[in-house]
Length: 495
View 1 (cartoon, rainbow, N blue to C red):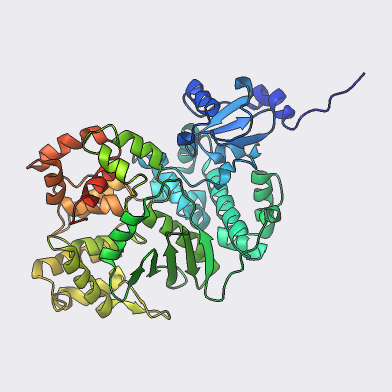
View 2 (view 1 turned 180 degrees about the vertical axis):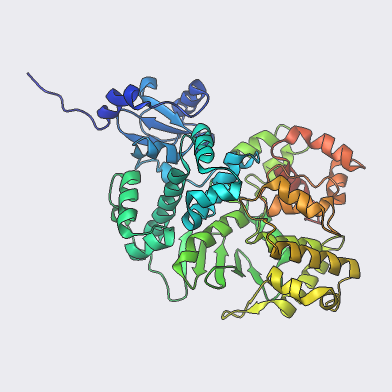
């Protein structure tokens, strides 16, 4: 009698009922249709665990479509790993950039995911994450498992594994340095987590070497295509503050904040790479996260474009600029202060004011650039010193009040409660609805932010009042921020 050897993953199939392997994706039929058609629009939003092989894939995986009874569908890679599956080596679902699904709503799970991606669990643990969200660790665990199928610790491990994978593949850093830079506490933990995610040692990923230069590490900036580079570059170049930033063709260089000191970054959109010079490897992953938010690399362009192209006003704009991103920021506080400087003045005038502020209160760096002033430095300077830079009295008071609020702990980072931040900004003197929504769009990363008071935007819509603009934009939810960016970029006075 011939004995057939069991296939890898048969133990999962036989054991599935006992282990409680259930879908966390809400619509199993829609999920299987996406997998059957290899629909790339679901990449990052849906993951399929294949019981017969023990791997998990993205829907567009080129491998043979598994039978429905062999599939378990999840919303996150972390849930797949937690269930005992490893990443497929063909479609590499663990190497995909993140999704903006959880940025649509400001609920608890969304904030938790953004804070995990910002490294809060690495720094403060799950208990610290729960404190940030003002809930108990048990409640947070319950919500995330229900929403994503994965616990906070699972999400944090997946984040570290994804960061480590990029460093292993794109640099020649020693494995111990990769582990430290990705947030692991030990090489042993690094090896164990990577084996769980990959089914192989991390060294197996190093198919080629990219030797770090003496003046920095080069990393790839993974993203979903298409990426409209020219509008992003035009936005940044028009606002490049002398002394702080340099924009030259497809290259942008500037200083960003780091915990161990200032960090030099040089982004190239033609190659979608970044050269990063850090004082400590502990700042590397966080810096990459800042760059991803600046370039809006975790957007799902096909999904956004598909939704907006149904509007006759936006359809030609989407066709002209597929993959348009909303330029973000490397630091929420900096963006907010620059927004106040730019109230009711031209882009050129705002840049001049920002350059004066940087020259007067910024910190020199070894690279010939100046770091943007901290909120504490602007607060300490006081309104009189700000007026001496050419600001009006009301603008100086507004900037000083904002800097004071930031110094006191106003959170404008990726994990902030957006409605709390909006309310706090709106309570500051000299900060109106336009500034609040502008900060929500570019600093808080709200894809549905909509500055209805913007005159250029209202002209593009052909309406006279903010109320009319809001009514016209209702059909664009939850992507009103991207619609706004399309309308701004078609005008000369791009915001």
